[in-house]
Amino acid sequence: MPQDRSLTIKNWAEEDRPREKLLSKGINALTDAELIAIIIGSGNADESAVELSKRILQSAENSLNQLGKNTVTDLQKFKGIGEAKAISIVAALELGRRRKKEDALDKPQIQSSSDAFEIFQPMLADLPHEEFWVLLLNRSNKVIDKIRVSQGGVSGTVTDIRLILKPAIEKLASSIILCHNHPSGNTKPSENDISITRKAKDAATFMDIGVIDHIIICAKTYYSFADEGIL
Image: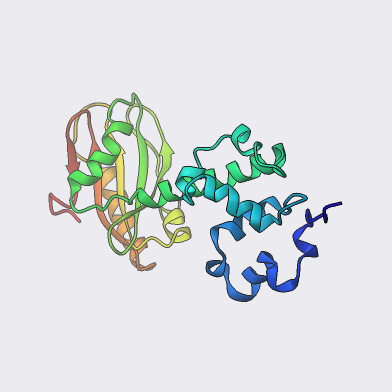
């Protein structure tokens, strides 16, 4: 009768345990097969989890990208891989794919007022009401986030300076760009627009946060406080 080797990782010799290896030597010390072995937890009657994982990888030419093309049904063809284990492998590979995609999406860098306009124009140009937004930037002027601060009516929106600065402080922004739209199509700033800009700049100064522009969006054009020398 063949020896049952479908032991869980807990039953392995200590030096063969990927989990312990991860804790003692770090995640980078593990091979792809050892990482997959942690996911599946056990092998089958003839193979340990690592041996089974190596065979699964070999079937995909030792490529994680190739392995990621396998379906749950494909993986279940391997002895010792049931539906639950197959789902775990597919889910782990999908997370890796999404992480890689997320890392590849470089955050836009703001180099001019037109860069800010291009971000907000699709969002605000056609709205029948005013909205006030703040664009959060890091030290390299790359976008951290964009936050809607308030929403108003056709003729205006009430904006609290504290609501402008709150997300900037929470997300450790180095600078911000204010932005709102004018449904009327008139890009000229109102006295209230100018007042809010000055108040926001003064308040942000105490927090070492720069207010580098205030953009007023209309359908196909915009007004920049920075370009006009008001800031």
